[in-house]
Image (cartoon, rainbow, N blue to C red; front, side, top):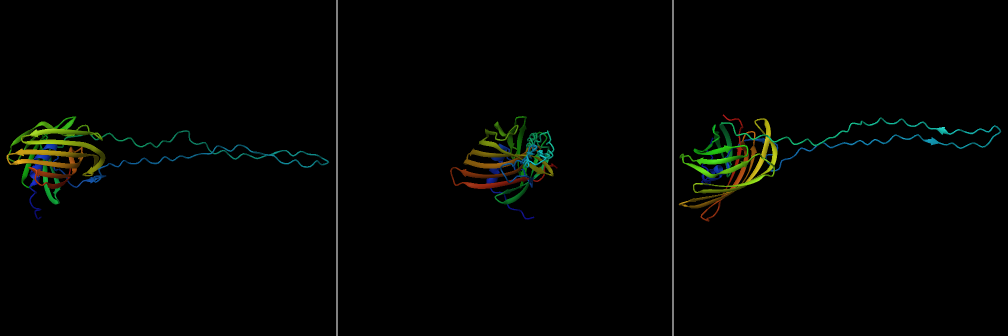
Length: 290
């Protein structure tokens, strides 16, 4: 297989700042989804209610006849009574109601199982393969093209947070305060924002849950929540100030604790220079860790 070439120089900066700050790790792979391509979930329509109207029974009808002229032996004609039509059978007294099925309770959110997950992603149209290793303490190490980044993840009943980052050289950096990646429990329309600093990097992010759908991974159908983010990362160093603005949309599967599909577009400027743009698409290949 021919190598697709090196990753653009923009990506390492995105990986440390954006991926670590927001938990936007590039974990993905072919996913069979009911509406992965749509940002809005499609609700199943309830079957139409069919109503049958029954006419009331017909009342007996009396038809008079004309009396004949008097005759030597006068007789009076009696009215001729028409037999009523048989009444139709009475409809059932038990009402039939076809109600829209109640929405099922959301799937619970579970941290990802420890192990190695394979993902596929494209950066500016160039294909790459990589891995995400989840440790027993929930730390996540992303590795691609010989580079790696370890991110400390905290899970609780109210949030998924990013607590620290460790680069390939082993240098740690604790986020203060921890970055709120996902607020739990997931609710349609819920929004949040977060700020954090790690060394010379400052992150501000605004995020929200825009829809809930069903997604199938490895033949198993589960909830999928679409989360949209706007992220601003400012990195100050002796060489200058770099600002990254990114918009992303991801499909998060709470049963797996992973993002199964994600698209992102970023624009980077250094000391007010011309912006450099980049786009990333990621897909989880399998929810079964090796």
